[in-house]
Image (cartoon, rainbow, N blue to C red; front, side, top):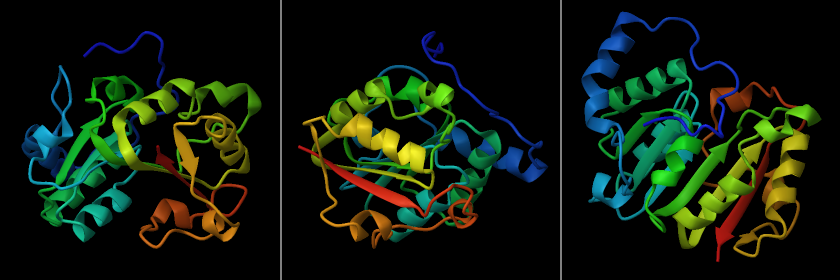
Length: 224
């Protein structure tokens, strides 16, 4: 599918070369778990036995995605990640953990979200996205008006959106983008609701590195 000319993928999408095993796994497994190349993406059609359909945007090395899928085998998980090396790690976990309830796609989610069927998701995760902390780079952050509109379009009524970051400027940016949108209700009633990781959160090695400038902030929203 051609890239949307209005979007640009910032940062690296490829790191060190894949190992022969990683490349072989991608070649063998990906055709069965990738999203369709064109046309509408219907999570129910992709994972018809799942009673809930969840999307993780920018899943990194796939630890959270794989952990959630292993913990909830009756849920269907779709992950989109542009970085090849992280993508390869996720494919490896799908194989090793024998996860039949996962579909993975390598690419920029901003190109893929428009293809998803309206009201097709029960939950969306966006965990520790690239913060682009400098003010002049704010337009590169994933959370913008257009992606917020996609979140609203794709989530069912009562669907949940979780955004997490360990960069204060990004947390502020998210709240500015979401605060006045009547389609979403922030779930925090007290400080601990965003300071303490939710009970169902799965911590990753990336999160444990504490690369940001604040403790992790967890922002849960519900689609009304």
